[in-house]
Length: 242
Image (tube, rainbow, N blue to C red):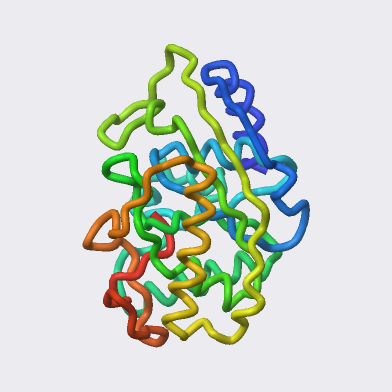
């Protein structure tokens, strides 16, 4: 209930302040589970995407820090965000389980394959957590490209710009079906192939220059030991959400 009340309040307000353009909204499934995988330019990305999706609730895994104070916890819970610890071991397994549970409830799960906000406005190499979830849950991935959100609130700004009616574009691509890789969620080559395909589609939608390196050397959400495999990085540094 709180989610829809907050959305009902923010949607007309943000559309008044910013010039929001939406493309490919028909590609977002009207029902059933799916992963919305987008580029990550701004803290407000997690607001603009749910804002434009009609009649469906978006869920994100967010930093547990946002939930440590009751002053902010009620808001983040209200907008569909679930706290997750950015540590390894059992806490990372819990985050993975939560993500799978969200998809198991036929909901939309939002993920940023880069794992963190872009430090330079470019699109960086995707981490394979999104591929692992897609294959393990057997759900489609809808690529999304955001343009202009960094002008609203860049990484170094504490508050968003409220003047100038900045143009923000949100584009959704056709759902990607990875059933051909069923049962390969521990195959490092399959995970990298799926991740690169997702990131390529995001690049087509966002128009960003691609950089074949991770946005940060140190990740924020390690994958659990029980599902670690060999990759071109140590998957103790894997990321599910930024």
